[in-house]
Length: 199
Length: 199
Image 1 (cartoon, rainbow over the protein chains, first blue to last red):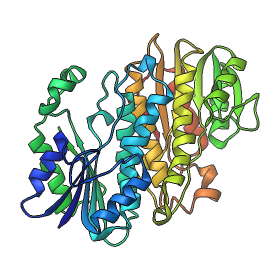
Image 2: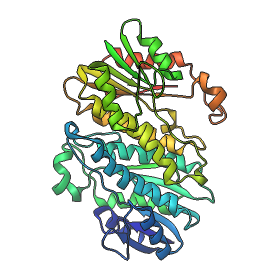
Image 3: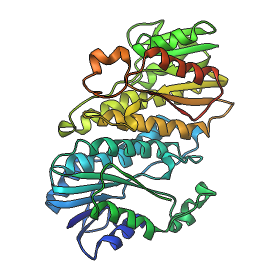
Image 4: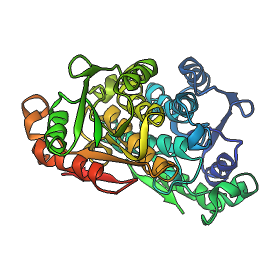
């Protein structure tokens, strides 16, 4: 399969590439690195990306920014960052990617544990993750041509503890390699409309 | 208690008012009707509303628009309507309402069954509902001063079947009166961070 991985050079993205690369052709995409670049906040940039990659069999997105901010200081501005980037960015990868994906192809997005297990400072992330998971369940029942869509919802990564550990006190961290396996299951299996939690 | 009900003249809003009015002072708010008007898409309009209502003990929102559209025709434009209106509108009622709500007050928002039980044409609604439910779970753990937040997630209403019945084939409809009781439970009880499903 020809697989486009958005966020391929991030911690999760590297694990995805590692899990998929033996049997597939991987197109690595980053915001600044990789074979191609994309700004997922910009629908035009997404369309240009797919014009460069050409048709593909699977798209994996591990990309998307959200603000972590004390709820007391939270305003619409910080919420909008997550809506435009991690949420609408990934939704647009699907909506625009439909024009470039082959029959029976798959989209695999990324949410995270905060949908159901909130932490302090995490309201924007929870909101965005909850939106992505419900979108995936709904999109799955309407996608044509045998197309599939799933979302991987990882807990905090072992590899991210130095940066994010203080936010996730008491959360059991998961190794990126285990998270990579969930994307492999989504891409090479036949599931659709599923939230693949890795906890 | 002094309770601000946004969307008070809608089908759900009327049931909310009915459930709460015996023991409380109700301020009815609509987009065009009610004691006051608000455009929840506009943060400025929300702030002006609360300057008119003055401080309150509870806010209930049953307001918010989303597009129902065939997934094949879905673009960012239709998704954005739901993000700006039902999602960010209700989130802003909380973020701005914090400046006007009394200690131990409560916010009660509205999502819907499509978070977990999607229908054709419903991807925007599912996305927005999922976002609201995750936001409420997260916001609840950070709200100060004994403030609470919950969301009521109703199935399709018996009263809405003439309009929406064709979208919800096979869904068991719920009478608005039962839905009203869930808001009563949220406002007069002490729950927080809960999704109150009425199915």
